[in-house]
Amino acid sequence: MSAPIPDPSVPAIDVQDLHKYFGENQVLRGIDFHVDAGSVVCVIGPSGSGKSTLLRCVNRLEEPTSGKIFVEGVEVTDPDVNLDELRSRIGMVFQSFNLFPHLTVLNNLTIAQQKVKKRSKDEAVEVARRTLEKVGLAHREDAYPAHLSGGQQQRIAIARALSMSPDLMLFDEPTSALDPELVGDVLDVMRNLASEGMTMMVVTHEMGFAREVGDNLVFMDGGVIVEEGDPAEVLGNPQHERTQSFLSKVL
Amino acid sequence: MSRRQRAQAGRLVQYAILAVAVVVIALVADWTTLRTQFFNSQILPSLFPELITTALKNTILYTACAFAFGLALGLVLALMRLSSIGPYRWISTTFVEFFRGVPALIVFIGFYYGLPVAFPGRVLPGGTLGVVTVALGLVGAAYMAETIRAGIQAVPKGQMEAARSLGMTHSRAMISIVVPQAFRIILPPLTNELILLTKDSSLVYVVGLGLADSELTDFGRRNLSQYVNLTPLFAAALCYLLITVPLSIVVRRMEARSEKAR
Image (cartoon, rainbow over all chains, first blue to last red; front, side):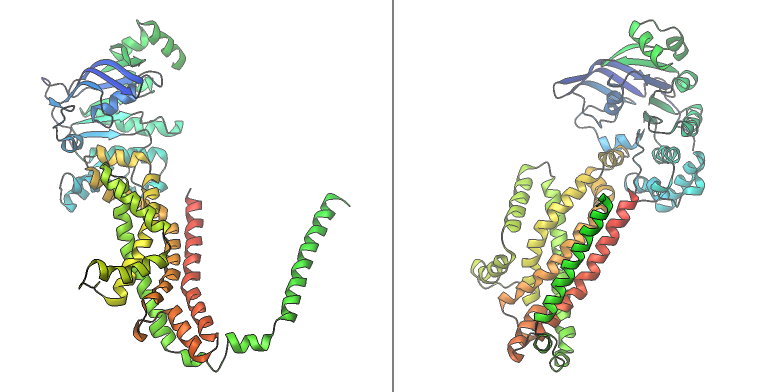
C-alpha cells in the first residue's frame, strides 16, 4: 500500500491556541502546533506535560476546552464535523495496544474496514493481509491477541490502523509498555512507514528514533510547547533551560 | 505437646465430632419409613414417563423462555442505565430496583390477576408459557441488567477508544466490540442467574396449571396429594438437581478458566 500523496500547501495537522482543562486542572495552556503533510513530528516531554492530551485532542478522543484543530484543512473542533469519517482517515496507535481480544488478528484488521469503510469482506481481507505482511506478521493472522508478545501486539495494532488506509498516523507512546528487547521491531515498522512518506505525529520517549526519523521535534512541559525545531539541533543544543534539564535526565 | 502435635490433635477431635454426629443420626432415623416415604419403589415407576415428558420438559421450557426474554430485556435495561439520556437511566434504575426488591411470587400473582384488570379483554399470548416468560423474565431481567452493566463497565476504556479511533460510531463499537467482551466476562454470573430462574420457575403454580402445563414442583405436589407420599416431590427435587448441578459445574469450570487467563 502506498502512502497518500501529501498536499504540501495544507498542513496535515494544524492546532491553534488549544486549551484543555480536566476539571480545575489546566493541562494544555495555549498550544500552537502543526504537522506538515508527509513529515514526522515527534513530541517529547516529562509525564504530565500534556503531550498525550495534545495528541488525543487531534482526533477528539479528548474534547478540547477551547481553540481550533484542523486536519487536512477540515476543522475537527467544528461541532458539525463528521467525526467518524474523519477518524477513519486518522490512524491511531495506543500505548496499551488496545487490540480487540475477542477477535483474531485478521478480524481485528477487517472489522472496521467492513463496518466503517464498507469494504467487501474479500477486499478487507486482502488489505489486511497486505498490511500484516508489511509489519512482518503475516503468519499470525489466525492468532488471538493474548497469544502474541507485546511487540507483536503493537505491530498488529499499527497494521490495524494502516488497513484503514489513513492519511496520517498518531502514535501515543507506542513503545512505552514494551519490554526493552521488543522495542526495536516496533520502531523498525514505524521507520519504514516514515520512509514511505506517511505523515506521523509521535509522542515518544525514544530519543534515538526522534533524532533519526523525525523531521521536527517538539518539547512540551507544563502544558506549553517550550522548544521546537530540527531534532538533532534540539537534542544536541537545547536553548531552553527546561529542555536542558529534561534531556540531561533522559539521555 | 509441640505445636505440630497440637494441630494434629485438633484435627482428630474434629473428625471424631463428625463421626459421632453421623452415627447418632443414622441410629435415630427411621430408615424403613424414610425409604417408603421418600423413595417408594411402588410409586416411583408410576411417575414415569410424565415426570420427564411433561414436568421436566415444562420446567426447562419455562426457564429457557424466561431466560431468553430476561436476557434481551436485561441488555436493553443495561444500555439504558448507561445512556447519556436522563429519563432512560431513571426508568432503568426504577425498573431494576422494583423487580429486584419485590418477591418473585408477588410478581407472578400480580401478573396473573393484575393484567386482566389493567387490560380488559386482552390476554397474554401463549397461555401459561406467556405468563411465565414475562413474569419470570421481568424478575430475571432486573438481576441480569445489573450484571450486564457491570460487565460492560469492566471492559477496558481503551477498547471503546480504539473502536472510535477507527471511525466506528458509539453504537457500532458497543455492538461489535464492547458487548461481546462484556458477555465473556459475565458468563459465570449469567449461568448462576439461569440456575436461580430454573428454581423460580416453580412459582408458576400460583396461576393454577392444567395437567399439560404442569412443571416439576406442581407435578410433585399433585402426586404428593394423590399418593399421600413424599416420593413424587423427592423425584421432582432430583430432577431439579439434574439441571442445576451440571450448570454449576460449568460455572466452576468457566471461573477456573478465566482465573488462569488472568
